[in-house]
Length: 86
Image 1 (tube, rainbow, N blue to C red):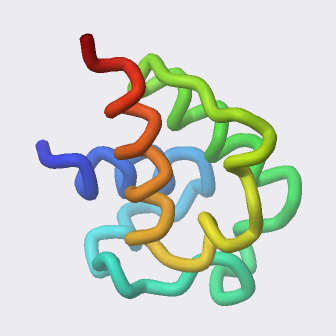
Image 2 (cartoon, one colour):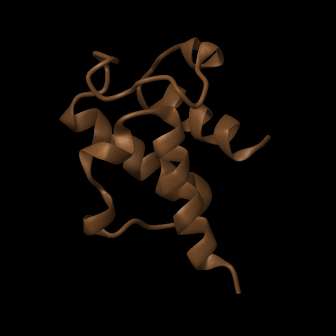
């Protein structure tokens, strides 16, 4: 499973989308486009990503812009993973 597929899996689970993320790609809008993605769901997505990938995000990284699209969310995860590498 590649990074995008893993992020979509976490999104699907955190937002209870029941497989709808199968039709998502990097350009799929999230915040404002998915009614399921409210402020509480954002926390569930963040926690899900941190747990799934074994990473953590700084408060300064968690802006509305990172939840704009699937691609921008994947970039956030990718940056956090790059910090973990030796």
